[in-house]
Length: 495
Image (cartoon, rainbow, N blue to C red; front, side, top):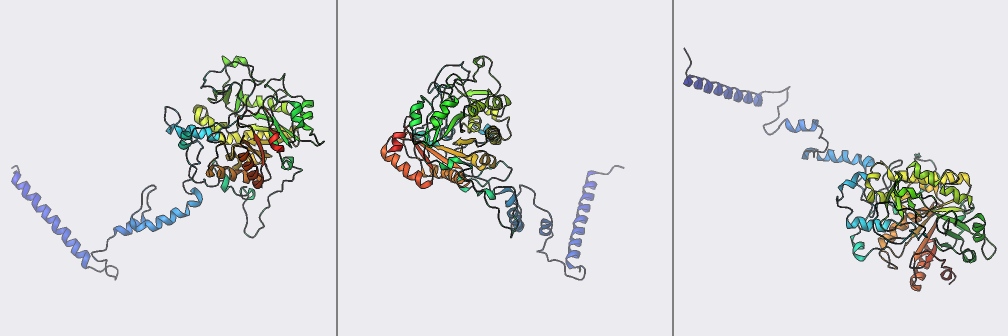
């Protein structure tokens, strides 16, 4: 006989009532029975908080209030491993991995302003021009001076403000330290220090080991060099171009270098050759006209501010073979001509690539480290070929935080420390000066010579710069405001 629906409903009600009575009985029994001779927790106690203490908080999830103190203690102990989130270095573009976050339409106004503040174009052959994506054939022309790109007031306002310095770099890592916070050299090595043990002393760099430290004046000319006027100049150091127009035919010969090395008072000076390591220049002897149709893989886009200057994949063996390692290489020719050293420019090209040639930059896990390695290679090679050969790096002060660069160079040069970043003869902001000063002072304390060039015509500003550099212990050269670097301005020096 089938069971009716009413009967099933009553059975369900009876079972539910029985279950409720059973649960009530169990709860009353638990609340009134002893547990191991101790009173059980009262009704307000719960096992849940005890369980929470036993379960560690998951990564990335905030712990409950009862564990907040414990979480903070754990987080505090990890600071020595991760450190606080470092503030981004103002004026320096993000690494290749972060470049995707920029607008697909191109760099923002702040990117442009940052590029103009941090990048100093090398000699250009034909003045300013627009962006040219195709490589032009060789054009006979005279190199122009490297100089900081002026910006308008609006562009200067768009530039990111420098507010704080990043933490010091971890040895062997890629983190950066601001120049102003760079620790002494003995604290930047990988050697651990035992308590109670005497700290290692920084090696003393004497003026005999680094003759640049003897200089009290310097001159800088890259165009229209007159050998007689150069020889008659009073400077202790002269920076000139390897050739009058970049070709082998107009290259300075050993006797030319020796002629301008001799000072009018019978003494001698140091002669350095300009060398752009980050851009290929179509007016140089190494330029191949066939690159217009079939350019090498390492040749990238043209500098939008300077025609006939092209960024390069400086880590590429093809480019590096043009720079050093054979009698026809650029550095080898400079050494053979009898120069005392080189004046390296465009060491900051890795920053340009992160803005203009991102595809190439993204192929390098540590593109800044690539430049450090390149500078080190150039230095080791040059000093092995010519012991005592001098290496001076222009601008790119952020590279001074790398021990490889500090070991490779003998001096650092800085353009426009006090004036000119936002326009001709316009005074730089206090933060801009302080940021550069931190790096330059660090280099100076490590035994490196510091050369500064200001582009000024106004006597009062020239006098201000002279007093400032003397106080700072830097060697100043005042070039004409037009920044062409086509004449030696030693009349100002004599005044």
